[in-house]
Length: 496
Image (cartoon, rainbow, N blue to C red; front, side, top):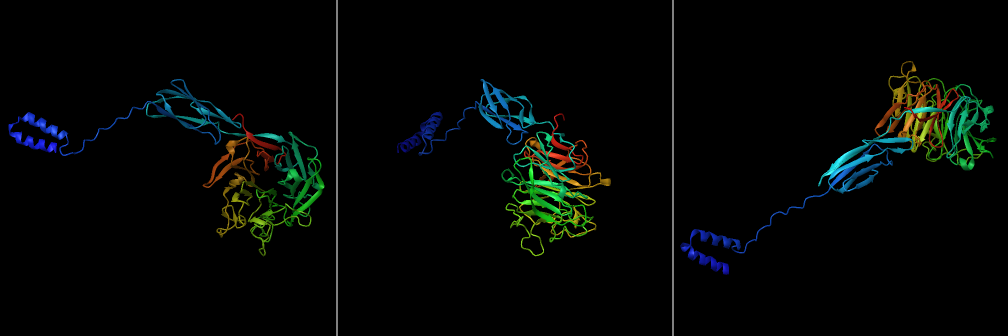
């Protein structure tokens, strides 16, 4: 009310007031809000200036689980040790030094680059420094483990055992212990082994419970050319098996030809015994065994020997694909194979190499929990239709990897399948599958991924002659078995 009376009073005096005084009076009334309006909006508040900054130190090039070795120093005696990528905050502005030192994992040394660098931290900002670790390019070398063996065919070792066990084709199982071949074999069954053609004692497998039961399984051909898997038991001495303890697990007729006996007996990750048989021999599988589900030739068999006794030497796993099917042998796990000389398990993955006829060598890779695969022989040789311009590929599992023989077998003629490396001495090679060829003796590898075959590499090792087989010890380290009678261990080349 008071403001309203003053406004009316001012209007009555307007004619008598000077202009400057009138402006002053009106301004005074406006500042009072006129009719009770807003008192106005305050201006923006300026935040205080930043006084510290940040530094992100990034480490690259190290395998998972390997720590970096980095030290950051700076103003005000700042010091911080880092083992991985990290952002440091609250740093005083100024110049910081990032120093890194080499780290070693296994037998590999990783060197940082740069070993020392500066980074300037500014208030309110983040500086960056990157340390790239690297190792020398890996090259491999062979060291001689044993010589003068008689046609060695396979090398293996039971879990946790430092000894190496080598099968000789004539029928003996030799032991390499502390770098020496023992004069007395673990077992000598030469009296019951036929070495005609491609036959002989071709491999052995240790029972998963070997430390408790002493069971060892031998794969050989007998005088009637049958493929035989027989179990023996280690006696009171760990280095001598009882020759009278034999229990024949399975005998497979192979009557006509002296080639394509297959050759490997092995336990899978499921605890079952696998047996890889050839197609019966002769060029092109003339008897049609590989595609015949009523024949055990040209197959990968899967049997249960956990309760083997003379009256029932093996049982059929209920998950085998052809159980209770008329005209199909329930022992069969996979078929369509020509001569699966060697295969290997890597977890639940099966790497099955199959020797080709005239053109292609192949490696089949499958989830071992799924049986019934038809690998195509003799409809196909690798990814080629065999002996025909076209073929029906329906239902066939084509190889994951293959190579052509090339002119005059320049690339090889008979694949020698190996293993996926899982040892500790060469961590850079984890997951790589190694293979060779009987005709050329190379050492090559590749990695199998969801995107296909990658990182193919020829390791350019010296020629050791015909490579009969790979071997694997209890630590997962790999060996090459040469036809010359020499065992070579694959290792790091100390002078690349």
